Image 1 (tube, rainbow, N blue to C red):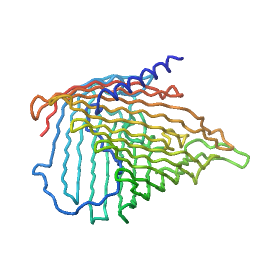
Image 2 (cartoon, rainbow, N blue to C red; image 1 turned 45 degrees about the vertical axis):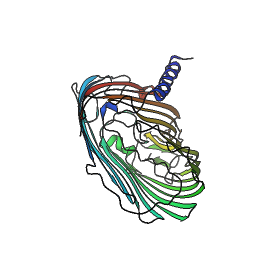
Image 3 (cartoon, helix red, strand yellow; image 1 turned 135 degrees about the vertical axis):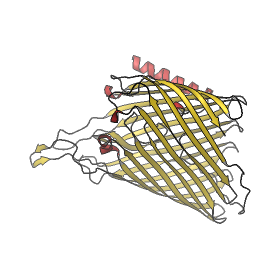
Length: 445
């Protein structure tokens, strides 16, 4: 057994222990991302009426923190450490009635590094983080329901809770994923949900944006049958279109072939079909699960490589558990074809698992945990008649963050946290490890 394998095993064991012994966290103390993953429940009809709105539906959180980062450059060979200062503000707004429920989260912050990072994009010595999350559910009638789940952010740090982008610092980027769906109850036991999901990823740095900037459009239709009061069977079809901003751009020097010069172009645009079966089940009022499994059929219409059609198993699952009002746990899993984040490997097979949890240890102490693991198998690519091929390689990523808040008064609290990131890769230059420690003051009102 090699040293690297032993280290991986030890870290996996530590992740497992943390997952079962502690709850959810925010890296560097930033406000949490808004998850756009939904867990569908059983088909049911509710009474339509009006409700009483809260007199004070707003919640504001202001934090000032200081800390230390031992690898700002997220590099194996050019590590640089620095102390940092972070300030952030977050606002949440909730209201609802039997017909309409709305939840809004927004905020922003900045992190300043006292030792300016070297060899970073734009020579930027600070990070930015601004976000907006919205969930809206409206019951137009006892049979018809509209849902909106939207999230947008402009940030610097990679986010391991989202299936997107690079797993290292690569400058500022914008990300959004917005889902709009309509559910209609055709019969007491049968309902359909039609949805459209819009996605956008864009990096400020043009060198990264060349092979990352893209639009994603996903259309879906779900057929749900209520088998028992706590269990629904689901059949679902999805159609996805991925278009890159720089599709068709030359990404390398031309090669001579028997038929003339060959210009290697970016060839990542794709269309995908998903055929899925699943189940939504409520084990109790506190524990529920939503599972989908099937196949994905992906086609690259402009591909210059030989295997332009890909078929893969597809799986996604979510488990939510609320142990009373003081503890909550959400566990997500996914296996699918994903967009590659290197120039010459357009696709990868990816398995992701992540857990977020929160627990009130006492009336004054709250602990949070976030733990994420990702395994990527990058596909090899053969471009006939050229040497512009790419070899297959494997990469793994871990990210764990733990934070604790102690309430001094009703409004003021002390916070402290730790975040560890580890990337192992067959390409040694892509590996790195990183630790961040922070502590500060928090005001909530």
